Image (cartoon, rainbow, N blue to C red; front, side, top):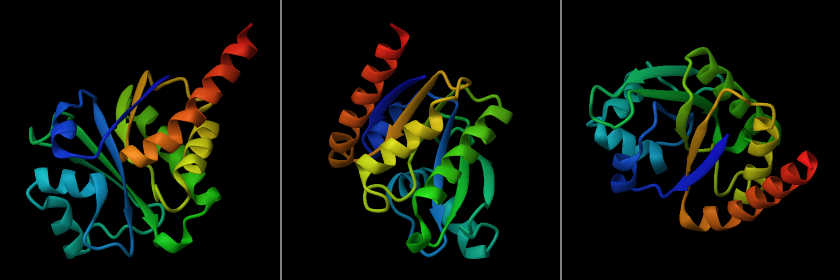
Amino acid sequence: MIIHFTAPDLGRLDELRTEAICLPIFEDQRPVRGALSLVDWRLCGGISRLLESGILTGKWGERALIPSRGKLSMEKIFLYGAGPRGELDDGRFRSAVAEMFRTLRLAKVRESAWSLPGVPSLPTAARAMELFLAESRDEDFQDELILIESSSSQRKMIPVLERERRKAQAERV
C-alpha cells in the first residue's frame, strides 16, 4: 500500500483522485472540524444537517456512507462514529482504523483518503501513525491511501512512516 499525505484545505481536497474519503465524527464535537468540516462545506452543510436531525450522532461504532453527488472528486464518503473525544485511546483508535479497512474492503474501494481520529492531540500524531501502521500491516486490499493531516502532524508522522518502510525493506532482504 502506498501512503501519501495532503493538507486539510479545500483546494487540496478538490485535487484528490480517490474512490472514497473516510472521516471520523466525534459525538461531542460540534461544529465539526478539520477535513470533515471541509467536506461538509462542499456538501452545503449536508453532514451538519444529518447531525442536527439525529440521523448521525458520532456514537462509537456508527457507520454511514453518503454519496458526494458530484460535489467532491470522490464518489463515496464514509463516516464513522468515534464516540466522545475524551474516550479515544490506543485501543479505540486501532479499532476504528481496523473497522474502516474492513468497510473499504467490503465496498471494494482500493484508493481512499482518510482523516485519522483525534490527530493531532488524541493520540499524538506520531503515536497515531504507529497505531495506523500496525493496524494496516496486513492490509493488502488498499493500493493507495492519502492521509489528510496538517503540516505539523505530517512532520511528526513522516519519520514514523519512513522508519517502518526501512524496517519492511530490511525484512524482505
